[in-house]
Image 1: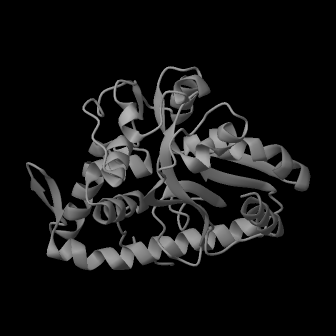
Image 2 (image 1 turned 180 degrees about the vertical axis):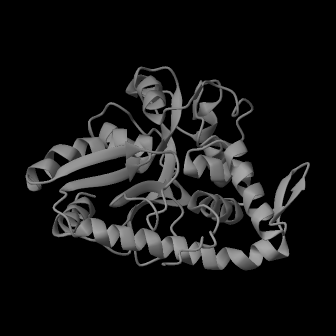
Length: 293
């Protein structure tokens, strides 16, 4: 008679993934956003792991959660394991004949920088489909099945990154408004347009050029940079332009930079590739994007 006793079971994979994300990102809410679940689901997963091990992994505090010493000791092993799993899945995906190239892009970069280049990219890669996902935060290419990410952010200096352009900011507006702006102090009294994501742009620029604008924090805010730019083109006010995003409008005369004061944000338009799984089409796409700057 065969003997088939029940085998001991480990915790669910989703619970382990929830612990790793919460520990790496420093909280349940951030982990929930990355994994597209609710913070309550993350909390339940963590509690199930703590019940299974009989040890606390997080300290619950009124201001949030904090890793215990035991949780901190476990984190590097789980992070490496999930990174390796992601790379293995990517290598598995590369074995097939899938010809779709998935690009994760900051919305403003997708609308203002990438979109004008898409026709040429499609023409050069007739056998491949280019799929665009607009995201507010760069994905983890060790985990997620994107082939490229393209974001305005601080470079990390890894081999997977290419800096396509440094991020410089300067005021831009329609030609009519530009006629009355000859020096930074002339901006006083003008409506200043603000992007909600880069809310500190005006303060950063004024500090760098040594200019004080009494109403510098006032003015309309926009959650879409492309919409703020359209308002600037229509004469609604002066926008703090990210040069890499407004360069096309400047070239066409739709916007004007009335002041020469360019200020670096310390960021750049960064193109990032995964560590493994690069195909011929992907290499061609990367080369074209680098040449298009």
